[in-house]
Length: 174
Image (cartoon, rainbow, N blue to C red; front, side):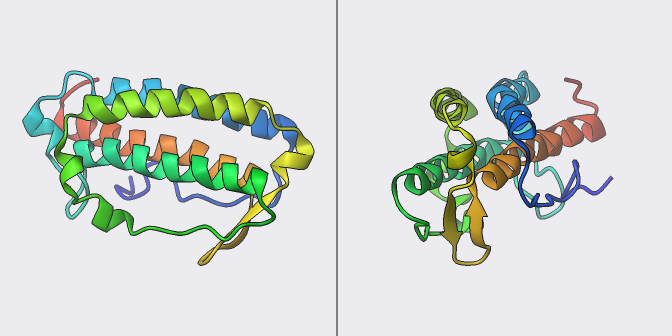
């Protein structure tokens, strides 16, 4: 198994169908519970064990999921309220070492749960015309909202896979 991409690399779809997008929203909805379950019962030492050589720890992964998903939520709201806005990227590796990433994982688990609750309400309110709206990422170009939904459905699975893989390799159970 590729420790960097336990569920495979993301492949951006051209334009997912409306029904495919609804299934992806279902994955975004269930992501917080899966993230919580994958860190349940881990000790502080286990939470601070990198999932691969040179990789982040489960603690950093949980905090990163919030950082990344809140950025995505804001980007999507910008696309819904502005014409193809240019979004600001951020350096996720530098964010991962900031002091707030040493907080207990419960802090970000609660934030992810609240964020996803609001995010899913927003996403389920969108029709096909809104799902085709775009924002402009300086490195990726124009990104449709349905493509971004696909990315974040994958992103949740991707990081749960990092922690699940670590638990399996270390014999920590789930």
